[in-house]
Structures are given as C-alpha cells and as structure tokens.
Image 1 (cartoon, one colour):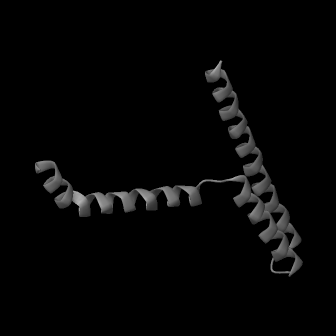
Image 2: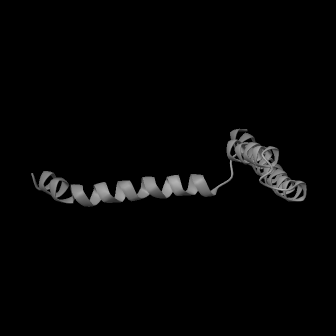
Length: 89
C-alpha cells in the first residue's frame, strides 16, 4: 500500500523527469551530425547558390566544411561498427 501512495505522490516528479530526458535526447539529436542532416545541409546550400543567395566562393567554403564533417562522421561510424563486430567475436 505504501508503494502505491509513493507512486501516486511521485508521479508528477517522474513525469517531469521523463519529459526533461526526452527534450535532452531531442536536443542532442539536433546538435549531433547525422548523414541525413548533412545531406540536407548540402541540398539547402545548393539551393541557396542556385537562387544566388550566396556566392560561388561562399558555396565552395561551406560545401568543403560539410563534406569534411560528413567524412569525419563516416569514419566515426565505421569505427563504431568495427568495435561492435569485435565485441561479437
């Protein structure tokens, strides 16, 4: 009976903690690079150049940065994949 009362009384606190954890996870997802996010950035960059919102020099500089981030992400994902395969053996 005491556990039921504790659960009822702590439910609002647990709910707020759960929501905070979900917001934290979503924020991390937005901050971290993903292949999809970087591809979208490249598409947005291409559209900005096509509509002459940015110059060719700006485009090349930003494209280089995005491609470097994409390459670093691929290397990071490959390392994780190799580590997982070693752990399975």
